Amino acid sequence: MNGNQIEGLIGMLATFGILVLLVLPSVLGIVRDRRIDRQLRAAERPAAPRTTGPAQEPEPHRRRHGAARAA
Image (cartoon, rainbow, N blue to C red; front, side, top):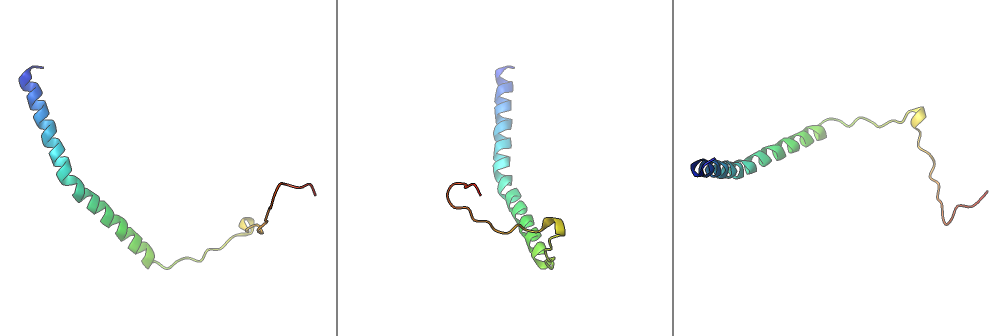
């Protein structure tokens, strides 16, 4: 590569970097708006009741204080 090609490459990279800096806030705003829209749609849907099946019954709470003791 000669000097002119390097200068052209640097110019193209600088132009591309400026383009990215100008477009990035818009892209981030669009992504944020879509996320908020998804959350609003999910909030509008009625919540399904949470049921636990016979195999998924919660265990009773057991409190353990101190070291494990032999029974």
